[in-house]
Length: 114
Image 1 (tube, one colour):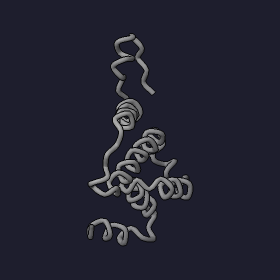
Image 2: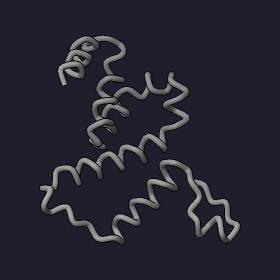
Image 3: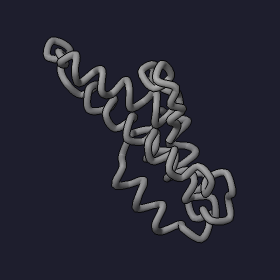
Image 4: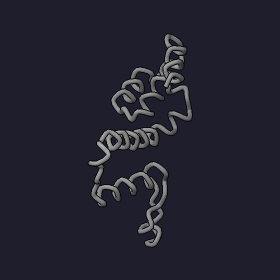
């Protein structure tokens, strides 16, 4: 953890501070902090083609991280999640985050990729 704190201090007050803040929000699954830094640093972000081109995918992935953080915060003896919820999350991650085609779409001949 000291390394992440060092990077925060090292970039404080520099033009790259927004990126470190964004990465920390992303890794924590903190959607509101991610959106805040995205709005505040829009000019810098727009100069990064990789971020602009993958903005939707990044938002989808941070939602998965947010879900994982919520599950991690549940006490270990209370982490029973219904299969239907797990299945929905699995499909969402496969289709939206990784761009995979679900088996029922493949079998039907539909190549749906968001």
